[in-house]
Length: 157
Image (cartoon, rainbow, N blue to C red; front, side, top):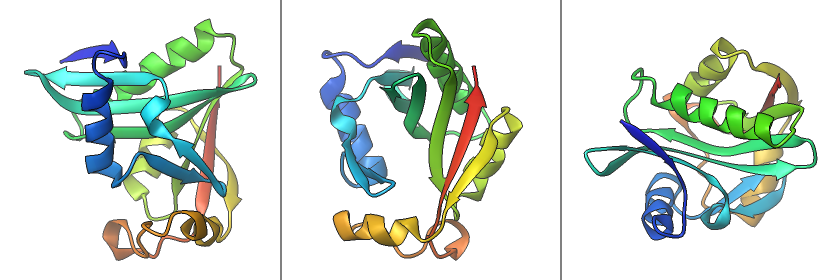
């Protein structure tokens, strides 16, 4: 397992991976669209294949994780990628690391809480607004749960 920064050299490969995982490079969060094709991040390779990816952005003194993907669960990939972002945020002088997930993503909710993140806000029916600007967001997600709400997590640095 090798983790490296996203660079101009691997950007096209990264963007293809993002499209495969998220169906586009556009992410809708809190009613705003973000282009993940230009965000910084870290990629995890195994045998020259991408097995994990995290993207983030700086927002004042906050670092916001925009996406986290691990193709092999329970192998430490997500944790290793999140640790890289935490280190980067700390070096940049950020005060907290934050992220948004949806109410259906029970695995992510468990993952973040086990790693010291606190649930700080629930944006009720936020996904309904997000669908207006990104109609490709499905109605149901993990475990056939209707996707309705955004849940914000944060961890102080």
